[in-house]
Length: 478
Image (cartoon, rainbow, N blue to C red; front, side, top):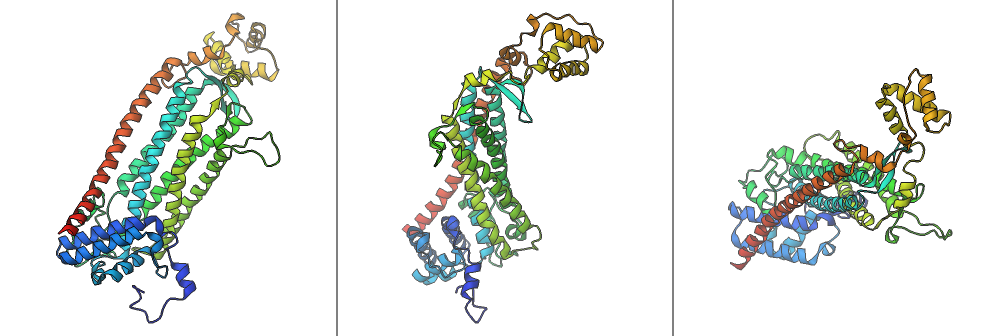
């Protein structure tokens, strides 16, 4: 094998299978081709290989790329070895491709490119989910529903207000994805094993060709760090926590509370009970959140005691990142699609808006406005509920008197209307119609700004990668 020159015998077959990463290296196959092309162009630029050698290597790399991952021989430890072997079969110059490079900086570069692209993909999915949540809010500014604390009926609220809370939670996940991207999008290429190389390289040049914003400067840190990988999984976990909470409410709303009708495309029927409509996708999102949380704990456990610099343990972290980012991205897409088609049962929501003494806080506030300290007003209302007394003027005044207060109260004041209650909460971030409309407009503007910003980031990466292909193709024309 390529890297067994130091050893006298071939690796045990079981040991090779155990140590091979080829089963999940398909995720970085195309990234490795790009890294190889950039490195070859860098070697040519710095005079370490000739133009004809560079041309032969890049031609062979394009052939390997077009043949695809499945065409690679499976007897190698990883995709990097396999690609190098296939290139060397096609041209003797392939033996020079690994000059001034280690698999340590090579794989770190590929992983960062994968994480970069998946973080951007996740950001786009979260943007779409935010758009749909804002649309739902716009269409439900006047949809009254019960709000809950401790999963008990608490106070009336508005569906738009509740959904905007979803939006703001998802917006923070979007921000985390982009913040992580800034730290991920730095190139380790040129760091070699960990102590750099005696060959003079232009690391900024190859970083630019691969779409990076800069380099991981310290060559030891460049190959030894996997915090970028852990942070990418954390972004996935954070997103899944948000999606799981939303999924949990969808499950409750379509069953226990009867607030929504799930779209058929995201539900299933029972194999035995014909009346059932099961919220399968929501349940699976909820379950996969647990899986990603476990993934986060797993990679941190692997990483916590790694001595510098590179250790083979790192290999076990790679598929965990691949899986976590893909789960988060797909889950965000499915949540968006499901919410876009979900039907809200507005009449049921309104009917239950005042269930379970949900207007008790409003009564306590009214008593407070009559001059009773709020803590005593709270006790008065609590006693009325404990004794199962109606909220009428006679009962309220009698109970207030037992607490030492004389208050004037009419029956008209006690005719609580859910719509009036939510409209009375006209503070910043409250449930009044005007405040909800204001919040919607603010979020629509932020959404558009974020969309433009994300498009600029993607265009920037794409333009740099186009330069890589342009330089490669220009070389091949000569």
